[in-house]
Length: 102
Image (cartoon, rainbow, N blue to C red; front, top):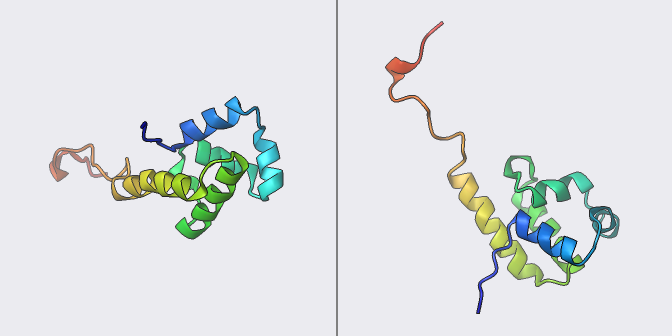
């Protein structure tokens, strides 16, 4: 059995395959279209606090006729991984001496 990976790209692919417009999901769920775009784009830094995000993901999943618990757990796994290892956490400088002070 294939393990599903519900990241934003996969959710967008599923939505498109069902020919559901993002605007329709926004209207049904009353979730801002902008947040739905952030979810589908995996733009984690723009997403709301985890309790809100969990609810958004569950409502989004219901609209796509997916298991809301499975979608939220999987997506939040990616989100938590990003929180623990954000792209900006790693310094591009080898040492403090490489940083030019102005």
